Image (tube, rainbow, N blue to C red):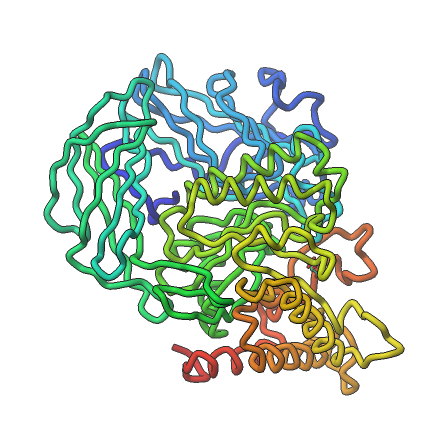
Length: 574
Ligand code: ADA
């Protein structure tokens, strides 16, 4: 969505709304943020968009309702599309005082269509509320282990669209070797014609004109690419497709690659691939999840330096700018809908279940063309041991498969041998913390627990007929306070974390049954200081191999050495 990223639109006017907006914050919140008395708001402050207001000095840690205001000049009576790629914790947009959309899925990229109305100059107000409220916004809860910020996380854009406009064009690989694809062009408009004439060109080549039937807002055609080079981690070759309809051209970027789960392996382009990765939060102490470009790029450089070919985007739909970089550098991605440790009483709330399901369509649509994304996940560490919650596991897996049969479906479980929903997924994701959250302190030395616990799970998978399902250890790790060194390698020291991860990787490299690992976690990130304080010194989750300012702990060197050696990379840098 941001300027440099894909998809790109030529021919339509695009207004980037980044900048400094007028701002007013009501500590404690207004009664009904969905219908506020906007005329009464006194804008007495300024705020950056993108940005989070509750990490900054004036409103740090506060919860309430924030009013953001800007002015935009558009063509009178234009048809408009507001692209809101991610905000928290809840938002509503108002155009000249008229409500044009409610953004109630934090981190999801949503879009709102409306008419500009008369005149060129307009007022756009975003009402952002960062209070926990299960009725308004059931996806974020205060018991999570990452801090829920308030603000507009990612760059906002306003597009002036044609009455019949190009929305997206998805490229599905139908024959990898032959370079054959099926293209699905999504159209938007109030009245779509039955047939449409468009021109399509791959990789900047000659455009072919086609007249296509439009059904359910979609027009389809198949094509064979001249350049059949595939995308993989070592050679992340990217292709483009440009579709022209009337005055506008949409350019999408994609890769030729397939992904399958077979006989316990993940196959990329038919070949088994092992995943060496990290779980990563979009977080920074000063910017929260509203990461500036520089941090997004820095994180990518660090992931590459460590030798990763895999990242788990924990625990929400990802910033498209980051996914573009993953495409470019051949880093495979597990992207997941927002969920964390959800409890049975939440599943029983229809608002929660429906919000969970509503996240799937935008996630699949926004990330549908990224070759890097190979796995869809959802509901991290949910209640997958409870029969009353199974309906939502069934619904989520069915929805993902319906909307995108080309990728693998998974979720990260911590229910261990109690889990009852693993039959539903293509890939098993196991979160486990032996040697950190101790199993039996009398019986085992902490580091010895790692093999004991992992052995038990491998046995469980085998005994339950899951040998064919690939296994990813989707989380495992230990906390270390940056700069805390200890000759006795005690818990919380950088030495303990280093030894811990070395032991984990010894086990991983000795067990082919585990086809991927995303260590917990890439960087330290802020969490709540309340209930978690005992296990979360500094009110941070300290299990990063880099701290929150991306400074390496001792373990960074260990993981780098192991990952790079496994991938046949020089131990230094690319
Ligand atoms: C869980 C959870 C992570 C983090 C981790 C931990 O596995 O999925 O978000 O909270 O535990 O550090 O304990």
